[in-house]
Image (cartoon, rainbow, N blue to C red; front, side):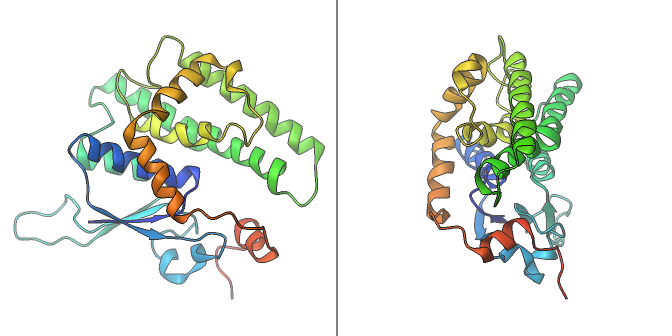
Length: 241
């Protein structure tokens, strides 16, 4: 059993995409969602910080790790950071990460591209366009330009390719898709990036991808942004006195 500490954000969706696609492939992992309401400050609870010291979700706890022999019950393994979780699950199941050296390198390149740039830059775009208490034209322009640049990088990569990093679906696709899905939030017209649009639309039609977002609806509620939510999302330190 895997405990998935989750909230329906792009980073949270990465992990449910993996788990639902694994189930579709017939090699599913039993998992239980442990909601982490980031607006309510659940990410700062001491019990969550023991598995995710950066006070960010997602995180997992695997109660049946693969490092125990016959008759041995190894201690659970916890993993935080979405990219590390995707790599862990791929290694555990043998799915969505090619074994061949060159293909594996490509998958890791694009996974790290997402966690190091595509996600953070689009996240800053979201923040300054939607959540910042005051408009900062320099920041809005800076992150909009970088967003457009990164979409261009992805569009060129997907020219003549069905998937980002290999001939089959990989963890690189799981990492990038949830951020691309929110293109309207960061004022991107996918028609300007036809390769990204084709990839996005084809993945959106997959049953496992659709199930992922149905799962998210269970936890997603439209709430007015309060001062407390703003502090929890954007201003509270990792540990408090």
